[in-house]
Image (tube, rainbow, N blue to C red; front, side, top):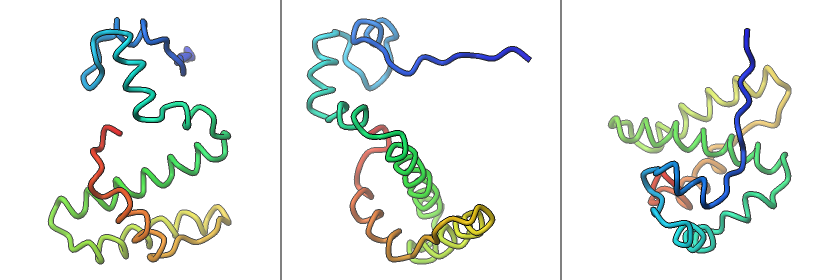
Length: 115
């Protein structure tokens, strides 16, 4: 099977050429957006911190999907926490608490998903 290598960093010129939705068309404006949205903070984070952030984001998407489908937010916390902890137990990882989920949720619940 052929391995595909994905590029992890793009210049503002490359991003402008891609014409992605949600990004300005001009390279200068992409730079302005990057500064405004603090993109450098992600790049400066350690690999471990980035992986933890990705896990949190996945958990928050799971809660958001349940809430959007009509599930009560507290029931969504319980369901996602239970599923996540079942996976964490198999990997001997620290358990996730409903309290942590609530804290994360109320910090990000109104943020657009593109961010």
